[in-house]
Image 1: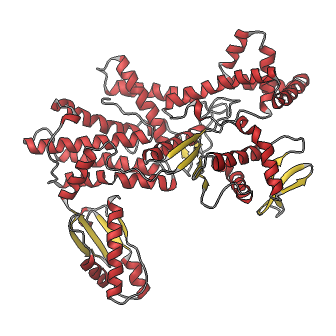
Image 2: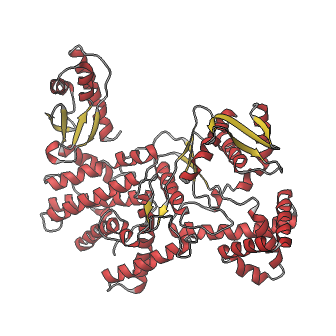
Image 3: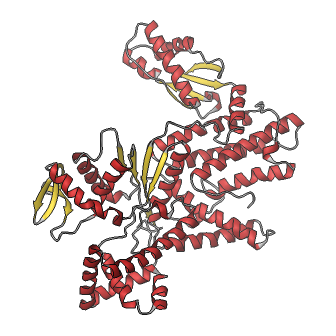
Length: 580
């Protein structure tokens, strides 16, 4: 239980006792939050205002009564009523020091694992017909951060990369591959640039009726399991997956080929979906297609909006494949929760999907299947980020440019480092800057992609946080000590020391806030504030130019800070460096 939860619990009990003594009605819980200003205390309790308003009594008098029932001597140095009825809470310095000591000697930083649940995380999900583009960054980075955080909390996380590896678009690609198959070198060179390969196949489909007919025939062959067609398809998928994995590795994304559950994986289950929906009385034939009509989904004209399960030509659209995936995740993987990190523009589709799945009995009332939408990455013109020619920006190109810009930045800041060291640091800084720029924004909001902002050493950016980490390691180097070998007691005697300690012990609160609504930006905000508190501590509390006990205590504070920043960035999937 973190500090906020302990305070909430104690003050809620005291509030209940105070209401009983005053013969007032209602069950009210306290709301404890970080006060944010030293004169307000370290935390501030509310909830009393609501109870007082409900009972039409004086909130300050109620707060004074609550104080008499609070028993927090081990945690709290002072409690006081402020304003119209708030309670300011000042934590004991020795209590904070004990919490920091616990964090110091625990690789989990004092966070106990939760009772494990099985959570499926559906994220990234590129279309294998093309290379990954900038639009894939949001789902990929956010989903991975949540997967890492849930695993850290003790949950059984199943990463599900729902890759688009099936469908009509593969007819053109396979027909084009077949055309090049007699020239193995030419085929290999063509597949090395999937985007160009796709464009050439698509152009030929539009311009050559004979090729277009062959492409349609390849779709039928693929769906029918034709050996030659399947062989070509496997070659293409292997090359495409390799392209994706190179991006994941560069971005430090924890997805692997073993996490791929492509659309093709669910082919064998599609007939079951039709059978299940038919047995449930949900299927209706409309213009030759098999559809589900639910009352809550209507078009702009008020007409029922169909969820098409099987098209009139016998083909299966995304809805069928996604229903098969829901059934598999619910019944085979036994997911307690399934989180879909998918673009906000797919909201209607996913609302229909979950509604049909529940109607079919695929999702029980105890299971939490949830769409977690993300906004769009915008260019400086306020429109979706594109190349100058209007095409999709390849994610590989973004990462290459990020490392190049970071190399220039590191070279300017630390020119005496050798080139290989600067390159290694730049790779971490550049990739971290791109990911952090994404993760530090609210998941649901659009944001503008701006190189200068994301690579700045000022503000809530990866370079700022990484610089804070390197500053701590520079202290250890100048002290000539290994952090793991430090001994002594943590003593908090200065205001800046206590402020840093309070922010450090709030790490569990930050982690809990992230997973509640799957918002990594809350962890980013915490790490940014922690870095700021450390900088204030560093400027006002000399670490190395003090007597032995104070020096040892402040060095230990530096260790806990470095460990907390490192763990937080690790959960975001961002590597750290010891010098910049």
